Amino acid sequence: MSAVTTRQYADIRRALLARQELALLDVREEDPFAQAHPLFAANIPLSKLELEVLARIPRRDTAITVYDNGEGLAQQAARRLLDLAYRDVAILADGLNGWQAAGGELFRDVNVPSKAFGELVESVRHTPSLPAEQVQQLLLQNANVVVLDARRFDEYQTMSIPGGISVPGAELVLRVAELAPDPSTQVIVNCAGRTRSIIGTQSLVNAGIPNPVAALRNGTIGWTLAGQALAHGQAQRFAQVSEGTRARAARQARAVADRAGVQRLGLDGLARWQGEPARTTYLFDVRTPEEYSAGHLPGSRSVPGGQLVQETDHVASVRGARIVLVDDDGVRANMSASWLAQMGWEVAVLDGLGQQHFSAQGDWQPPLPAVPTADEIDLRQLVQWLDEDGTVVLDFTTSANYVKRHIPGAWWAIRAQLPEVLERTPAAQRYVLTCGSSLLARFAAQDLRALTRAPVHVLTGGTAAWIAAGKPLETGEARLAVARSDRYRRPYEGTDNPREAMQGYLDWEFGLVAQLERDGTHGFRVI
Image (cartoon, rainbow, N blue to C red; front, side, top):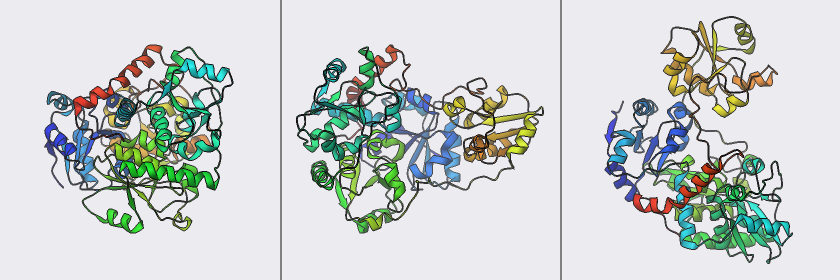
């Protein structure tokens, strides 16, 4: 087994400036990660490392540097990565404190590279925007205006501008001509905060659509801060477009991609890229998940283009890697690629595909290492044990899922915090572990067996099987064995955020361009 070495801040900075491939992994949970991290750090919590890392860092000799903030997680993560056959694994010298002490800039929130880039785009291109009050007046006057929501459909359904239509970001250039066929129609693009509305609006400007277009300034946050009511549960979505619209949008998108320096590849070129052992090549299908499931290029991963631009670090966690994008219309891949190229990625669009190439069906399945063996029990056995003393059920699903519904009496736990979990839960004659499917529970069971003499079992089929069988459920936070640090509560999501938090988030976004300048490693450019 390879040894774990140490890397300095200066080593990482030098590699970033040289555009060498590297993965800088923050192995804490998402909430502490969101409080402070380097610009190009990717968050893969130790708790879920085996479930995510093979897809996000596909090449085993990638230079990986892991860090924490003194919690002792980085050493464990390094050992697990070596067990997974990664060969170039190092720990960041002195962790997060060492980064900052050496002069490294720290950023807060999540998906920061994309958000900082969006602010840079607006500052350079002066992306047009309208305040919430003015948009509200246009809607009240039944003006010639259409509001397009550039977020995921589930986000749109949670809260949206009254009358808005769900058009996730990569779909805008493809769909806008049929959603606003009158060239005098004012097009408003919104998201929850700023980034996706800026990028969506600028996409339409870059593509040269004839309509006047503007971002809803500060998104649903700005709408709420203006004292205006949001709609909930809306379900207006885009429809199919004509072949003429598709062809025209494809020409517009290709012109933007060419200006941004996007490369072109055929299947032979893709094979050459994928065959180079010293480079990482991601292959992403940027159409809708429904289109991907119906038929896709074998080996591609479904990552809708708007979310790819918004959350690049979450799927392409090797900075300096190459990205190849796929669609079947020449619009969504080219527009998404145009943004990735400006964000410093080496990116290509795959050309020359016919319907016969979209031969694989079904949802994308992440690559996984060998799943540990476990002593499984079925629902009947768990029901019997729950009537007896001494059975402790530990649920390793996300805290949001747990709060929504869980097996009665189950304790919520984080895998990486098992010692604390054991201190805060009742003494057990036996443990039963679960999560949504019991996949993560199998990995947690392996860890737990090293910490206790009590038998450790895994529920076959997990909580999903319990729910499918119509068994009773509990809700709420009554049995949290550890704090809910697995997810950072975004100030722009939901409908119950304090006004101060929303305004503070906007103020933070306004300061990102200055932070980019201080950091100096971003490599962004704006066409």
